[in-house]
Length: 55
Image (cartoon, rainbow, N blue to C red):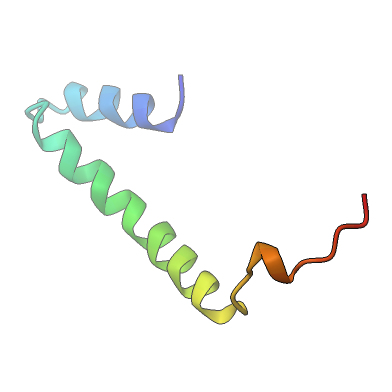
């Protein structure tokens, strides 16, 4: 079981409606998504044709 399964089990134990679980998962994932976007914006664009094959 992953963390989402554990959170779902905890929410059900607290008598939360199952449909409300989606909003909890979205809220939990938002900071990680925002950090990923910020990290990608700080990087220089990568273009495969600009790379050098060293194979």
